[in-house]
Image 1 (cartoon, rainbow, N blue to C red):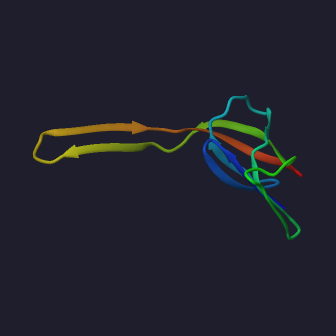
Image 2 (cartoon, rainbow, N blue to C red):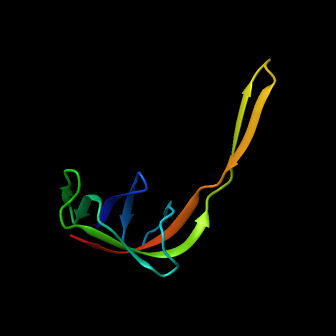
Length: 103
């Protein structure tokens, strides 16, 4: 059984027991989070596709940690103009463990 959920502007395929890294959501370690924007659910070969979401479907997860992603370097340069700009970015992430998928 798996589901496709939408969170943080992205879609994630999740199953029970999966650990995923999503964009930061509010909450502390151990808090339960319910995702109600479920786009698709598959159970024993039976696929339900939402238009745009599956009615009554929910995915429950638990926050494991609030972390940061890898450091990315953003470098811009215009040749022969003397312009260069260096910047960095680290995305804030939340590690989630999927506990339950209900239809």
